[in-house]
Amino acid sequence: MIYFDNAASTRLDDEVLKVMTPYFTQNYGNSQSQHAKGREAAGALIAARDKMASLINCNSDELYFVSGGTEAGNTAIKGACSHYKTGSIVLSAIEHPAMLESARDMQKHGFELILVYPDENGVISPESVEKALRSDTIFCGVMAANNETGVVQPVEQIGKICRERGVFFYIDCVQTAGTRKIDASICDGLGISSHKFYGPKGVGALYLRKGSKVDRLISGGMQESGFRGGTVNIAGIVGMVEAYSRACACREEHNIKLKKLRDALVSGVLSNIDCAKINGGGDILSSHANISFEGCDGERILFLLDLKGICVSTGAACSAGVVYSSHVLQAMGLSPSRVKSSIRFSFGNYNTMQEVETTISALCEIIKKIQVGV
Image 1 (cartoon, rainbow, N blue to C red):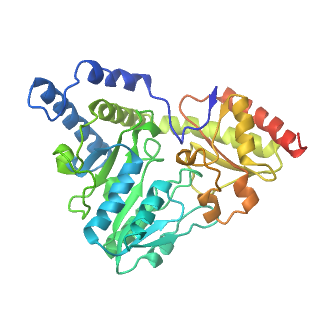
Image 2 (cartoon, rainbow, N blue to C red; image 1 turned 90 degrees about the vertical axis):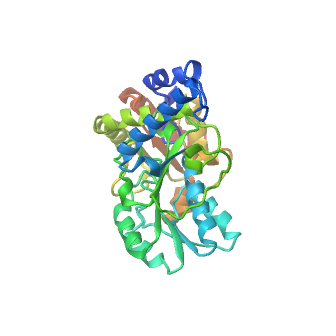
Image 3 (cartoon, rainbow, N blue to C red; image 1 turned 135 degrees about the vertical axis):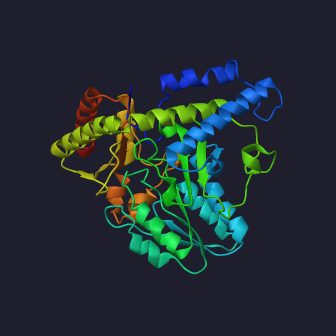
């Protein structure tokens, strides 16, 4: 099996699993319990929070452990709306559905959603964000890098504009975590998901700058300083922090490897398949390649690759099972035929050059069959 869908989820690192295992079988106490097992778990939680905070450049009391990027984004948008009661929300039109759907939920409660569109390369300009901000804007969100194209956004410049305007600025860092340095100081809030950098699924982190006017969404006990009720997932949190620490330590080395794999696939595809075109431009994550095969149906390409044991994606995994056209590529102004024929290849640490060569060969065969109507 060849797995080129690492943007959707990565496999759990074996060393991370080893670190997590004791918290399932030995150190299994509830971190809220007032006994030895509870204190043991609480100590692990404190250590994990301190380490993660240091890695993203924030204070420990500004970091909350959540279930992933979706919960982080929902909490930031809906929590801000809960506090302010009224106003406008500014988002890029290429945000993950977790952000866009959260904002649309808030439209039902009277908030206005303003979308900022990218250029043809998939880049959101700081100037376009600045024009969209209004005196009643309570929240602005622009992702660090797009999950479909891998195009990196100028979030540092956008963050500066938002600070000058006094607008809460949130960055979805789900795709950049582990591949690009994350610096919480450039924003008021950000979210990450563990399973994107070889950690466990169902755990993530939310940074909120101290003093941010964001209300809690999940009431309960005093977990996470009373901000998020519910028994804390110690094993998952320990695993996430270990995975992120390892990813940061090897970031440069891994990016070099991923870029070689990505560039080899792109070069091989473009030189052998006339109808292939790259989607997105400028600074692109080393792990991503979004390619259209005009005149061919992306869903059919995915299906035929799957029959050959090659896993790819036509868009966001959260929309799997639903036939749709990529809102990201549409926002970039691509033609319907190009949008419909797009495939995302996303590379990870366990991929090899042999897998790239096999995939290029398979694609050449599949596209030729589709074009001749087989």
